[in-house]
Amino acid sequence: MALAAQNFLIPNGTFFVVLIIFLIVLAVIGKFVVPPIKAVLEEREDQVTQTSQDNRAATEEFEHAESEYREAMKSARGEATGIRDEARAKGRESLEEMKQRATAEADSVLSEATSQLNAQGEQAATQARSEVGTLSADLASRVLGFDVTTDSTLAASVDRLAADAPQPSAKGS
Image (tube, rainbow, N blue to C red; front, side, top):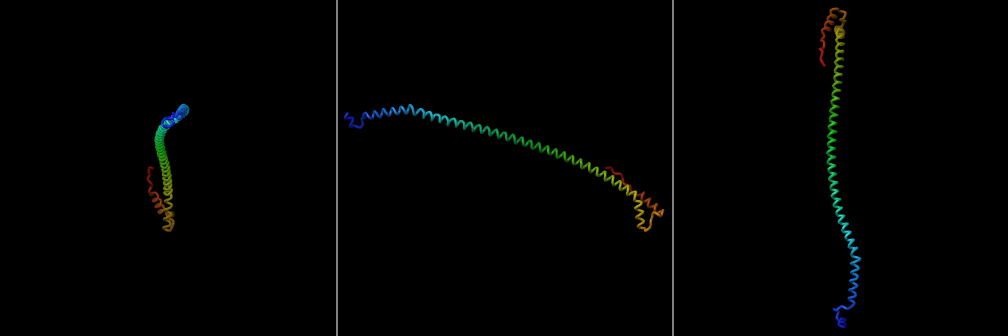
């Protein structure tokens, strides 16, 4: 053993004791410490994988929902355009109907006013014709300076002129 004590390359008993203790500690760590850490790491890796799959699924669902939203908006825009066009058509129809009614009312009012004016004109012409003799006698009396109705020849001439006065022709309305 003296040779072993002098040569540092030859291991002594302390080395073997430390080696056995190291192997025991290594076995205890390998048996009791590594499996729980390995289980936690595997669980974490599973969670990361699951999160990644969930993210992909959520992205796909979002894209699907967004495409459905766009389709719904496109459909709603088309429907709104149809409703707007239909409302415009109904508005034009109502406007046209109101124009026709207004035109008919204006025509009836115009016809009524024309007939009233014609009647009043006829009445005024009849009245004027009936008074033409008297008015012409008064006018002649003023111009001549004496009453023409007292003279029988002049009165007959005035009556003849009143009878010869133009009669209005009957116009159709």
